[in-house]
Length: 207
Image (tube, helix red, strand yellow):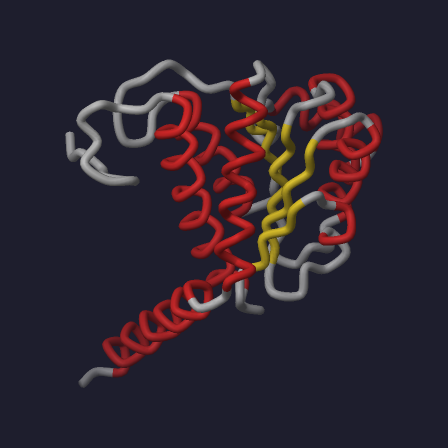
Protein backbone atom coordinates (compact mmCIF):
# COMPACT_ATOMS: atom_id res chain seq x y z
CA UNK A 1 0.00 0.00 0.00
CA UNK A 2 1.35 3.43 -0.92
CA UNK A 3 2.12 6.08 1.68
CA UNK A 4 -0.67 8.26 0.27
CA UNK A 5 -3.20 5.45 0.50
CA UNK A 6 -2.16 4.73 4.08
CA UNK A 7 -2.62 8.39 5.02
CA UNK A 8 -6.06 8.43 3.40
CA UNK A 9 -7.19 5.34 5.29
CA UNK A 10 -5.75 6.67 8.54
CA UNK A 11 -7.66 9.96 8.19
CA UNK A 12 -10.90 8.18 7.30
CA UNK A 13 -10.43 5.95 10.35
CA UNK A 14 -9.96 9.01 12.57
CA UNK A 15 -13.11 10.52 11.11
CA UNK A 16 -15.01 7.31 11.83
CA UNK A 17 -13.75 7.29 15.42
CA UNK A 18 -14.96 10.85 16.02
CA UNK A 19 -18.38 10.08 14.54
CA UNK A 20 -18.57 6.98 16.74
CA UNK A 21 -17.64 9.05 19.80
CA UNK A 22 -20.38 11.55 18.98
CA UNK A 23 -22.93 8.77 18.51
CA UNK A 24 -21.99 7.24 21.87
CA UNK A 25 -22.30 10.52 23.80
CA UNK A 26 -25.86 11.03 25.11
CA UNK A 27 -25.13 14.67 25.92
CA UNK A 28 -24.07 15.33 22.34
CA UNK A 29 -27.26 13.76 20.96
CA UNK A 30 -29.45 15.57 23.47
CA UNK A 31 -27.79 18.88 22.65
CA UNK A 32 -28.53 18.48 18.95
CA UNK A 33 -32.17 17.73 19.80
CA UNK A 34 -32.29 20.85 21.97
CA UNK A 35 -30.76 22.93 19.16
CA UNK A 36 -33.50 21.69 16.82
CA UNK A 37 -36.13 22.75 19.38
CA UNK A 38 -34.65 26.24 19.77
CA UNK A 39 -34.15 26.87 16.06
CA UNK A 40 -37.56 25.51 15.04
CA UNK A 41 -39.26 27.44 17.83
CA UNK A 42 -37.60 30.70 16.82
CA UNK A 43 -38.47 30.31 13.15
CA UNK A 44 -42.03 29.27 13.93
CA UNK A 45 -42.42 32.42 16.04
CA UNK A 46 -41.28 34.64 13.16
CA UNK A 47 -37.73 35.12 14.36
CA UNK A 48 -34.51 34.38 12.45
CA UNK A 49 -31.24 32.51 12.73
CA UNK A 50 -27.92 34.38 12.55
CA UNK A 51 -24.72 32.40 11.98
CA UNK A 52 -21.08 33.40 12.41
CA UNK A 53 -17.65 31.82 12.25
CA UNK A 54 -14.11 32.34 10.94
CA UNK A 55 -12.32 30.52 8.11
CA UNK A 56 -13.77 27.05 7.66
CA UNK A 57 -16.39 27.89 10.26
CA UNK A 58 -17.41 30.90 8.15
CA UNK A 59 -17.96 28.50 5.28
CA UNK A 60 -20.06 26.32 7.57
CA UNK A 61 -22.12 29.35 8.64
CA UNK A 62 -22.83 30.20 5.00
CA UNK A 63 -23.53 26.58 4.13
CA UNK A 64 -26.11 26.15 6.88
CA UNK A 65 -27.77 29.50 6.16
CA UNK A 66 -28.15 28.37 2.56
CA UNK A 67 -29.77 25.09 3.62
CA UNK A 68 -32.33 26.99 5.70
CA UNK A 69 -33.16 29.80 3.28
CA UNK A 70 -33.20 27.65 0.15
CA UNK A 71 -34.03 24.02 0.96
CA UNK A 72 -32.45 20.95 2.47
CA UNK A 73 -34.21 17.77 1.34
CA UNK A 74 -37.29 19.06 -0.49
CA UNK A 75 -39.14 22.13 -1.73
CA UNK A 76 -40.85 24.19 0.97
CA UNK A 77 -41.18 27.85 2.09
CA UNK A 78 -37.96 29.69 2.91
CA UNK A 79 -36.72 29.88 6.50
CA UNK A 80 -35.13 33.08 7.80
CA UNK A 81 -31.36 32.71 8.22
CA UNK A 82 -28.46 35.12 7.69
CA UNK A 83 -24.74 34.32 7.65
CA UNK A 84 -22.87 37.29 9.15
CA UNK A 85 -19.78 36.37 7.13
CA UNK A 86 -20.74 37.35 3.59
CA UNK A 87 -21.08 41.15 3.25
CA UNK A 88 -17.61 42.41 2.39
CA UNK A 89 -18.52 46.09 2.82
CA UNK A 90 -20.00 45.49 6.27
CA UNK A 91 -17.12 43.26 7.36
CA UNK A 92 -14.39 45.59 6.15
CA UNK A 93 -16.20 48.69 7.36
CA UNK A 94 -16.63 47.35 10.89
CA UNK A 95 -13.15 45.86 10.86
CA UNK A 96 -11.63 49.18 9.81
CA UNK A 97 -13.68 51.38 12.13
CA UNK A 98 -14.03 49.19 15.22
CA UNK A 99 -11.59 46.29 14.83
CA UNK A 100 -11.93 42.74 13.54
CA UNK A 101 -12.92 41.49 16.97
CA UNK A 102 -16.25 43.37 16.59
CA UNK A 103 -17.25 42.35 13.04
CA UNK A 104 -20.01 40.02 14.25
CA UNK A 105 -20.94 41.88 17.44
CA UNK A 106 -21.79 45.03 15.48
CA UNK A 107 -23.99 43.10 13.05
CA UNK A 108 -25.86 41.47 15.91
CA UNK A 109 -26.49 44.87 17.45
CA UNK A 110 -27.96 46.04 14.16
CA UNK A 111 -29.80 42.92 12.99
CA UNK A 112 -30.51 40.83 16.07
CA UNK A 113 -33.83 40.96 17.88
CA UNK A 114 -35.01 39.25 21.07
CA UNK A 115 -36.05 35.71 20.23
CA UNK A 116 -33.60 35.34 17.34
CA UNK A 117 -30.98 32.58 17.47
CA UNK A 118 -27.23 33.05 17.04
CA UNK A 119 -25.30 29.96 15.98
CA UNK A 120 -21.67 30.77 16.77
CA UNK A 121 -19.10 28.36 15.32
CA UNK A 122 -15.59 28.25 16.76
CA UNK A 123 -13.49 25.11 16.85
CA UNK A 124 -11.39 26.52 19.70
CA UNK A 125 -14.16 28.40 21.47
CA UNK A 126 -11.70 31.25 21.91
CA UNK A 127 -12.10 33.49 18.84
CA UNK A 128 -12.49 37.08 20.15
CA UNK A 129 -15.02 38.12 17.52
CA UNK A 130 -17.17 35.08 18.27
CA UNK A 131 -16.96 35.65 22.02
CA UNK A 132 -17.99 39.30 21.56
CA UNK A 133 -20.85 38.23 19.30
CA UNK A 134 -22.12 35.74 21.86
CA UNK A 135 -21.96 38.32 24.66
CA UNK A 136 -23.85 40.90 22.58
CA UNK A 137 -26.46 38.32 21.61
CA UNK A 138 -27.07 37.23 25.21
CA UNK A 139 -27.32 40.84 26.35
CA UNK A 140 -29.96 41.57 23.70
CA UNK A 141 -32.23 38.59 24.25
CA UNK A 142 -31.03 36.22 21.53
CA UNK A 143 -30.62 32.51 22.10
CA UNK A 144 -26.93 31.65 21.76
CA UNK A 145 -25.91 28.26 20.42
CA UNK A 146 -22.22 27.43 20.24
CA UNK A 147 -20.58 24.81 18.05
CA UNK A 148 -17.11 24.12 19.48
CA UNK A 149 -14.49 21.44 20.01
CA UNK A 150 -14.37 19.15 23.02
CA UNK A 151 -13.13 21.80 25.48
CA UNK A 152 -15.78 24.40 24.69
CA UNK A 153 -13.17 27.09 25.26
CA UNK A 154 -14.49 30.38 26.64
CA UNK A 155 -17.53 30.21 24.38
CA UNK A 156 -19.33 27.50 26.33
CA UNK A 157 -19.99 29.82 29.27
CA UNK A 158 -21.56 32.39 26.96
CA UNK A 159 -24.03 29.96 25.36
CA UNK A 160 -27.51 28.74 26.14
CA UNK A 161 -26.53 25.52 24.39
CA UNK A 162 -23.03 24.38 23.45
CA UNK A 163 -22.47 21.47 21.09
CA UNK A 164 -18.97 20.13 21.71
CA UNK A 165 -17.50 17.99 18.97
CA UNK A 166 -15.57 15.12 20.63
CA UNK A 167 -12.18 16.07 19.19
CA UNK A 168 -9.34 18.56 19.56
CA UNK A 169 -8.47 18.43 15.83
CA UNK A 170 -9.77 21.44 13.89
CA UNK A 171 -10.59 19.55 10.66
CA UNK A 172 -12.39 16.76 12.53
CA UNK A 173 -14.31 19.27 14.64
CA UNK A 174 -15.44 21.01 11.47
CA UNK A 175 -16.60 17.69 10.01
CA UNK A 176 -18.73 17.09 13.08
CA UNK A 177 -20.09 20.63 12.95
CA UNK A 178 -21.34 20.35 9.39
CA UNK A 179 -22.76 16.89 10.09
CA UNK A 180 -24.62 18.18 13.15
CA UNK A 181 -25.72 21.23 11.17
CA UNK A 182 -27.18 19.01 8.47
CA UNK A 183 -29.09 17.05 11.09
CA UNK A 184 -30.47 20.29 12.54
CA UNK A 185 -31.49 21.62 9.12
CA UNK A 186 -33.20 18.36 8.18
CA UNK A 187 -35.15 18.01 11.40
CA UNK A 188 -36.12 21.70 11.48
CA UNK A 189 -37.33 21.44 7.88
CA UNK A 190 -39.45 18.40 8.67
CA UNK A 191 -40.86 19.96 11.83
CA UNK A 192 -41.85 23.28 10.25
CA UNK A 193 -42.80 22.01 6.78
CA UNK A 194 -43.83 18.35 7.14
CA UNK A 195 -44.30 16.21 4.03
CA UNK A 196 -47.10 13.70 3.70
CA UNK A 197 -44.83 11.47 1.61
CA UNK A 198 -41.82 11.51 3.94
CA UNK A 199 -41.04 7.85 4.60
CA UNK A 200 -38.63 8.56 7.47
CA UNK A 201 -36.79 11.48 9.10
CA UNK A 202 -34.00 12.96 7.02
CA UNK A 203 -34.99 10.87 3.98
CA UNK A 204 -33.18 12.82 1.27
CA UNK A 205 -34.54 12.75 -2.27
CA UNK A 206 -31.87 12.90 -4.95
CA UNK A 207 -32.54 15.50 -7.64
